[in-house]
Image (cartoon, rainbow, N blue to C red):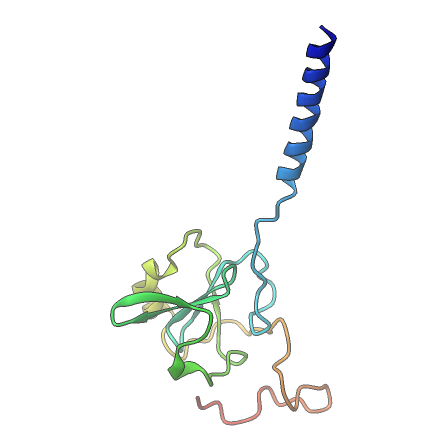
Amino acid sequence: MKLLKHLFIGALFFTVSFSNAQVSVNLNIGTPPAWGPTGYADAHYYYLPDLEIYYDINASDYIYINSGRWLRSKRLPKKYRNYDLYNEYKVVLTDYRGNSPYDNYKTHKVKYGKGYKGKPQKTIGQKPGKGNNKEHKNNGHGNGKH
């Protein structure tokens, strides 16, 4: 009888300990990039209208179409490697909860066409390089051509 009591208490202790460990798991795995807009800690995807590309924050992947297929990559496609993501407008997809944001690509492409600018955005971090201290504020230097 004592053995059963000890087994029951041990099983109860194990169950409580295990359930506490389960509760402390953080679901937001990814960290938004420095070029991402502030104020969207719960977002999973950005749509980059000028590039017609998605960015998966949790996986740190760019999602783009190539020869009719959607691909994922840790780097931008070669033709966009020199593109300034700090100055690119990011559409934060706050209403999408899936793994294939490109299922809505046709809608996004029309609603957020190239050159789309919504409300002003501030990036999470500063653009690396010269001119980013408080004395030299020029919002990106250059002519905006990419």
